[in-house]
Length: 272
Image 1 (cartoon, rainbow, N blue to C red):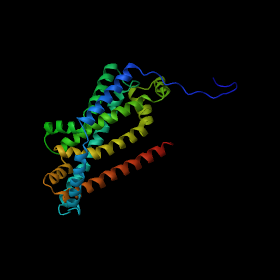
Image 2: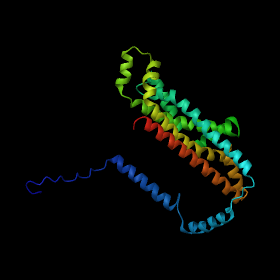
Image 3: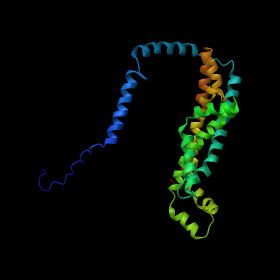
Image 4: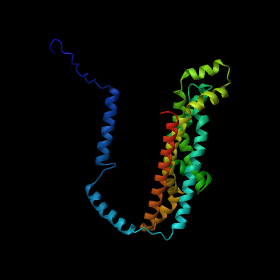
């Protein structure tokens, strides 16, 4: 018991975990144990031998081979265009989808449920799977990559756009309704201007992700530099693969720097 006059506040006691929490902990613990011992186990002997094989790869990859620099840069340009086009199309589709998926702007609960379902499906299925689906639908080439990136961006931006719309001050929308503004006027004059900074920053994050996804999508036949990388690795041309990897690194870093600069400018102009 604390002495009289002692104002020290004792730390709160730990709450007894609920049954649901215990089940989650047991399931996660079981997966970790199974993965470590059987499923996705890490074996010291394979790690030791892998270090030597990695050394062989690096010795063959240095110095990089630049004899096919022209075709590599051409494929890299296709990858950049895939990322840009897919992001732009995905962001454009995200805006009306987010309006329908936000509780304060959706005209009907059925449209709200449908749009939320579309966003969930788009986000849940990985972009690599979307790439395989669109390769089957439209054939090999960059078109499948653009569609896969667009759907992935639509799910990503659609969710955060909708949350940004729901975070708007209700008084802004109620005031426009009180002035007799139609639904489109409320969206154009109140909702979209308030959400534009958030929309831009989210779109920049999506662009960064698309730059990396466009490389991976090429591995499944969706066009771009990924096909060149897969071919070089399959034919054991590690010096050529090193050139491709360095080119990819430069492009991805450039995308990230440009997106970060745009975010800083938008947030700075917004007064934050």
